[in-house]
Image 1 (cartoon, one colour):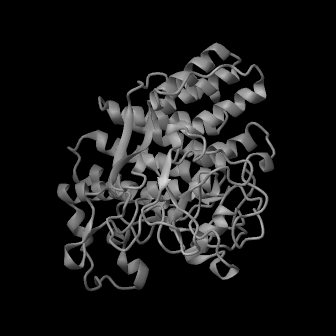
Image 2: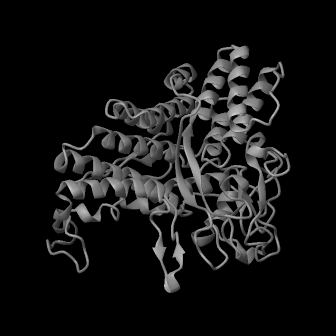
Length: 455
């Protein structure tokens, strides 16, 4: 967060000098309407990293050199859940590291003791919060005539970043703040429920600013519904999304090939990193590849087998064997209907539950036959979460849903998360349902580690 806000920091408070280091952008250059808009665009960039932000390398090669926070979150949360597996499966013990570049292995195996450093996704999500706060302050101060919806947009993205922090990491994430003038305020760790409530406050504030922007209004509504679902407030969650139309979708384009020419893609690589679409991972995992369900269809990755001869798979929805620029969905009308379905199930209104579930299913894949009521509450819960897994496949929802199955539905985590023998050098799956917080937080004097490692 400090790095992202460096252009606005008070330098004398950091290094005792007000002189700008060579090559540093003068913070005063942002004290204009154009500067404020640059910070706004930078915050969106941090969340998305769209194909418009590509770099030109040697020989004119165009490459997307990094993912935005949302795509990183989707990949990371997919590993700890049953959607993805690490790209170095089949390797010897020397290929497994519980830290650093191979963090994905320990994440996939859910063997994540405190002290293991977290991946860049944590800094990315906190960076969204920091960049949004800076831009909101700059727009207010230096471009007061700009549409309020711009600030509302940033509040919504900040809310989503907080949901993702709560879904992936242990209880105890500090919601420290950085404002546009460079004032940094450390905060102690917040509980998981406190973070969801903080996200709801962002969505509520955004609604007052987005005006007649239906796209942003519905994005805030779905975000609020998602956070309320995480808190177990089912009726309120359904109410929050009731006005969201079926055809709503907030998406942005991603170059899944990475634009590189060295055998790399966002999902898999020809070496020992990356990720591959999973199939019945660890006994409990859903058959994402073998089910034949079009919503989770995959194809052999264009990079071929990994170094150890294991096949790699990419999601068809993101290009499959021919990876290119296709959109990823942050929130849509399908998710709104799923939220309503779960609330109806909780209320015992099974006719509405089934109707909403089938509506979401039809919107996601109109070739699938309608569902029937299994007639037993435990089976209804399983069906609801299975449908959510396929309808929202690889959009960053599955990890939060698995934690909710443990936390809200009181299912033993050994029946929810992958378990048993791990298909690589790791002896077996661990018992963690979340990731620890990174060592970088030790700079925060109020930080004392995870408050709770439970779901």
